[in-house]
Every structure is written in C-alpha cells, then in structure tokens.
Image 1 (tube, helix red, strand yellow):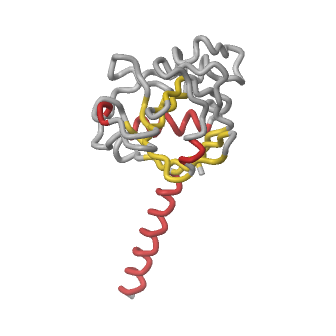
Image 2 (cartoon, one colour; image 1 turned 60 degrees about the horizontal axis):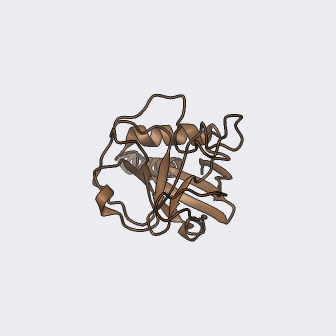
Length: 185
C-alpha cells in the first residue's frame, strides 16, 4: 500500500510540475515566426502575472515594436498608443502609454540581462513598469538589478533578431513590426 501511495505522490508531483511549466510558457507570434518564452514567476511574480493577464486578454495583439536598437533590445507593449487594433493608436506616441492597470513595484532579481531575456520597460522611476517590455538582443549588464527581468526566449530568437531595427540612437522605428499575437502555450 505504501508503494502505491508513494508512486501516486511521485506521479502527481511530476504531473503538476509539468503543468506549472506549461502554464509559464508563452507563444509570441511575429511575422517571421513563432517565439517561445519561458516566464519566471518565482523571480518576478507580479510582472509575470501582469504579462500573462494582458497577453491572454489579447491586449498585446497588434502592438508595435516602437523602439528597437540593433545589438541592444526590441521594446514593445504600449497597449494604449502602440496597438494598431485600437482607436487610440498613434505611432508618434507609442512608448508613452501603458495599460489601465496600476504601475508595478520593481522586482529586481539575480537574472542577468543576457540574450533573449524579457524585462519590464519603465521610466526613471523603478516602480513605474506597467505593460511595456523589451527583449535583449545581446548582454546588457548595465541593466542588471535595475530592471525587472521576468522571462526568457527559449525558442525562436532568430525571429526576434529579424524585427526591424530603428534609429541607432533613439531606436525609433518609422514602419515598425508588430506582435501578431501573444498567448499562453
């Protein structure tokens, strides 16, 4: 009987671990292909929760990559002004808005800003992250413990690399690529 109970506990634990891992995988559809993202709720629970909430409600669908700097990062997530599906879409204002939800407090972690890391974009105020995020093209150690990293591209980084680059200084992209869709896997 003990063996049966033990096997049940082991099976249940493995099954739930797999479900937990699946619940923290996202698919970012770009024009160039699908990107798989793993989220880190144990490191930045509030940022992951917000990201999933906005993604699964379709708020990121149609949002442009308004700031893209080659060798650094691609920024998106302005669901107010950067969403091509919204009547408020305004490319010149993209990057200045967020969602209707309150800003998030910083969740600085030990996650290094290396290639493929997702991190929350914010203003000079560390507690001003809302809906915008960026994906690192390369290592950016000057961002470590200054921005809330909450996930990583685990498949399809070659498609992220294809996102149209903007001005080398400002990152402004005149005819930007957009998120086709972003949903939980």
